[in-house]
Image (cartoon, rainbow, N blue to C red; front, side, top):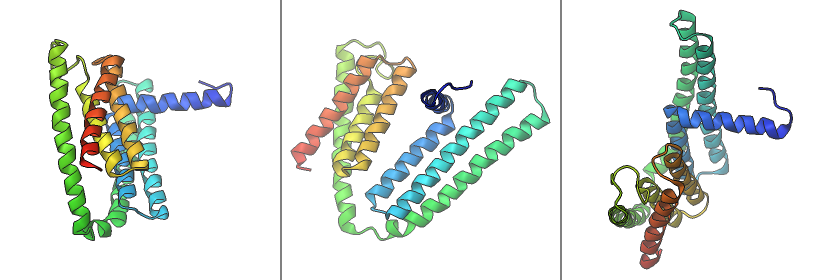
Length: 231
């Protein structure tokens, strides 16, 4: 479809990204790993140049996955039957994603290897305490979620009902990350939590209200734990 103006061009591009994100499992995996790598880079205080390399590498892998989906869609449009040329086109496209993924592993190794080996015990102890606090908060979040589901008489505790357990856990983890590593990592964690909530609504498992309530429960309980601990 040909766009009439710049705004429509951006809109079509965003629609394409959303389509790939919600239809391709590998895209969601790449995006999740990419966000985790960026968060790890910020937490471990990598240099600006190294952070730039991480952003470019993550972008390369995600772009390759998007192009791979585009090739598959075009091939499926041309024919739904098996054809050796169609198979080669899909294999070559998937091969480009594999190459980018392998390169990303090497980049991550060269950026993080020395820092992971040089982690000091004091840093590990602090992370250990925060991990205990996060686990405790998650346990309470799960209990509160189950109680609320029982109170609202949700027919299936593990799927659907008030509130959304996935949203509660996601926002609980996001809040813990925000308190442990304030700044970009915290905002990225909340963006991931929002993505989890959106996926629950998009799939029809939860309503928007159930997802919002779940997010509030997860965030408030974890906030209470970290505030009481004095973090």
